[in-house]
Length: 325
Image (cartoon, rainbow, N blue to C red; front, top):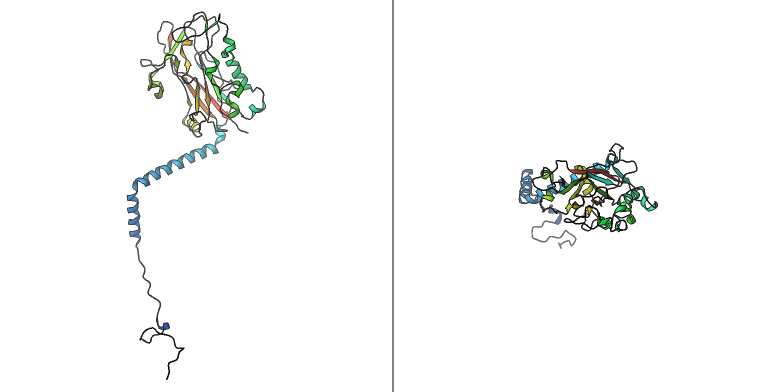
């Protein structure tokens, strides 16, 4: 009997057909939870330094995000309340300008208003206090003279050129307020017959001086001025945005060296007197976040005979509030 060509085909001599073969046996690798944990621990151990650095960076990032979120969410607490205090013209210390319209210590402004108003009240205030420093007001040689640290005519007024207060802080530029980079004018008031020099070792104020100023020798011709946020929160707000100074500075000083120290000297007090001053520009304000500022003139006072006067730091405090519409 011949073979049936339709029978299932086989490839060997066992006479087994395809249907007689079962599915192949599947083998599985088994891992216990313990071995997985060991492998994870081993991997973390090998990359311990990277893990630590990554954890620190993530923690700091989360902290910064939380702080900014809380600050932004609670921005109403950063708005003027009306109880911040009143502006005053002290007889000894720094005085700030412009004078706010409500005579408070809060310089509150809307940048867009400076594009609509010919002369904003804040601009008028600064124009008034800086008018005497214009070069045209100091031309009379009978009344004015050019002074330095070693020469100052007793019967004449020392010239203080307006140009030292910076090109950015001018009436033509709205003193920076139209661009939300406000300039604040700090003027030093001292009693008659009192002189001032930079703080140096031996002064009762030496231990309070800014560490940055201790690292460099004092300039006898200038009194350094610094402005900082009054609290850590204020400093955080200032530093949360990039500054627009030439070197990304958030706070600019004009002149950079500070106040002219030789202007307060033995002089004829019946004559006109241009007080030493410095213009300070803030370039990193956040909208609707009030920032409290404390400025210090790091100077030691002396009597006319050279005796050191015991006194507190020469300071002023104010707040800035920019409201972008």
